[in-house]
Length: 340
Length: 239
Image (tube, rainbow over all chains, first blue to last red; front, side, top):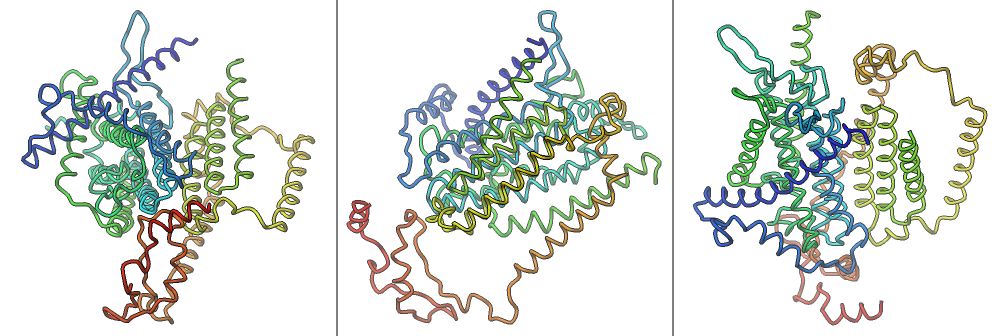
């Protein structure tokens, strides 16, 4: 077998396992941080300071009964959570975790694949991910679930457009759809007068960054945009009828998507592995953690949107803003190239 | 290259099988899933042909389209009709079969006479690599030689959007709908089909004017619009 193929395969396995491990502790950190913000203690019984809590949760979900409703569309009911779960980590394949390193005399690239359409690939996987939710909602034969599924579909179609368009500005500036290329361009130093700044796209695309952040929250169905599972109106929405490990697949998928989209945002807007001292994967991790903390912070702070407000925000506020951003960026790019 | 041939055969076999499944499935949602499977496999074949851009766009565009298709099915088709949605329309079956045969004949004639294979275009692998990759080449071609078709397509899509908005707008000459509509609430928590017997009862029920201009249906007692557990059991046994 091709050595390159083998090394990216091994790297993919490592990334997948790290993601799954992180996911488990993401739930722990979320509960702890939320508890601190709400003046509670949070999980503290299982293991030292509750550190074994995710393992106990996982075991609990594993041994619970797997219930399939009588009227459910059985095959789709079984398929939907798997679809969600499989597609969530796949998008991480294009994220560059650093330059190549040498292991046992082989040069190993710290990314699974550098494809020339990485940004589009990411969006494509994201748009596939919602199938798990809508099919789960449909197959449950429960009207709350169906409503949750329909909401998820409408929400993701709307915010997918915003998400894609907010990236166009970055693509115009970088001239490439490859994430490796985008990161390389951001590691250059920008000199404006006496100031030495990193060429991160958050500085040249601040509006696109804010819009991307909002759309990313909606894309991952997190609070305050968690309308598909709004427990106060839809008693859990698309996953009402799911139990045991099938439910946890949806749960896992949500947290993995959160981590993956945080990594993606850090790569696109915050320069990825580029840092002030000693570039490396730790900078990427630190930046992703900032986004993850932001997710939790948002959840504890902002109440859930009403459904029409959610749609109004996407189509009446964010879409015009993002189009203006594309237009401006296009003109600036042409001016920069001396074509205007 | 044996591995590549093997993978191609696998992908095309799955694509064909799921395409056949798409037209033979009884349930429209199952059909839509088979359609997605076909598109994904075709996208994988595009990747094998080093047309990554085409593959990504294929998935983005068509999964979105199929999603909307599923939405239409779920919103426009009565869930109880779903399994038998296709059956009972012999004229449609005969007509569809005939049109399918004609299409198949056209395609096979085209393939057998090899007229599908046109002159190769001006771009070969070296040319694409020199221009910086196939995305750059597609972009330059689309916005130089094919500007007119692109603009025409955009115009057609715009017309379709405006047409949909026009058709979907509420009628102005009629009263606003909330006044005219009979508002009835059936518990969403009931399983599908459990409330069907209630609809005629609701229609025949005494409608009382309450709370502004809205028509409300008032239940005279708690059991009126609720099926009891015994009735449910009886229904389950007869099934």
